[in-house]
Image (cartoon, rainbow, N blue to C red; front, side):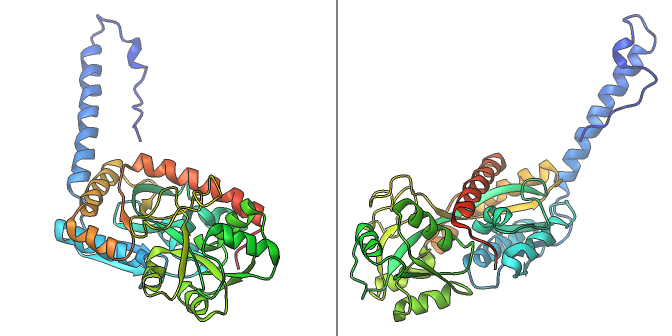
Length: 342
């Protein structure tokens, strides 16, 4: 924000010979120097107290892993405590709203993921504005969903699944971690593009959904790589395809859904970091640089890969554009599917 000096008259009205011109010039340049000094000082003094990273999910998932990994590394770098604050509930809206209302000084951060871009269209009203109330910092990591089926289901490809669903409309069912989740909207997109009727069975989280899929209570689901990779390797589930635009390095043998017959299908599960809107740009830049550095550390790359997640990174502006695209994309899918928050 630039300060607008209230001189008795605009500076441009001072003539070359005016005795006030030297004073005006000195005052103007002194003001600029002072503003620059304040900006530098503010960045240099950050962080000046413990940092809180709000995670709008329960402990245990990758959102939590990301927060704790960043927290440990930032604390080591800056010699300030970093506290991970898990605030689940309301489909992530409780923790997200808490972060939106926090002081915009860089000492409160929020882990965001797929739901951040979906909730504005999924809920009739959310108590914050994802575009106005947050300062994007970095797109930290991503992973595709994998389309998996119970091995007893007589399908081995996406086209097999589509053919079976068309032969038995409304007879197959699919599990999700709940309305508006990435696995829910991934399947709704597939249903729309393929023209099939598969019944939605929402669960309260991925773990019970996967358990019932393995047990044969449900037929098929999309789920994040970290949640199903070990079950695929053990033969408890059969993978048909990945949801992303490109094949996954974790399951290179699986085609993308687009390759398997639905061109244009592209869903990625992502994880990022934001701060309350109004956080000084110098602080956002400092956080962005440090987090990008952390994401390249060999031990962090190894940890993420063990969970089936790729470290990403980039600039705040790139993340801001990504968030705008995600919000617009899923608003259409939510509207077309009729999905609503539970």
